[in-house]
Image (cartoon, rainbow, N blue to C red; front, side, top):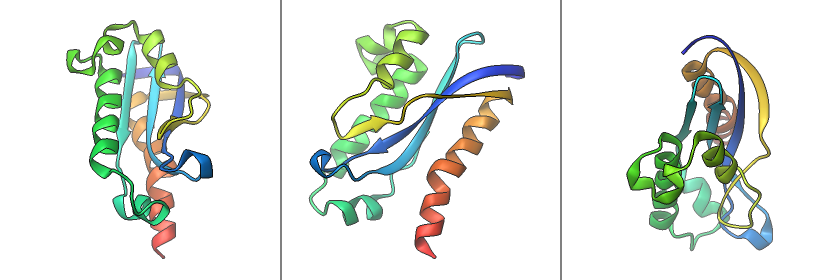
Length: 135
């Protein structure tokens, strides 16, 4: 995906106890309407999540995060939402909700390489937090 692309992105969060509003960043979703690019990268830090909620259902949360990625890619295993057009999938994934899996509000940027931008945003928004918290 070379060229200058206007894209939107959102940070994927896990909010194990919604009433407490505590969350950890677990991934990033990037969308470019013009090129038809919609992808996500996720890594669930189980230790960090269990520190917020020792009773968190890790298997269920991971399963939902996997579905999130399938919807991005438009895979039939992602259900009916994965069959929607790209714009509808992105808007559905980034809709404000009160559930365990949430996203930040979408932000915009320009990229010459969307796959590299996804990786860069993932490192900045997800891995940097994990690294700095382990020091």
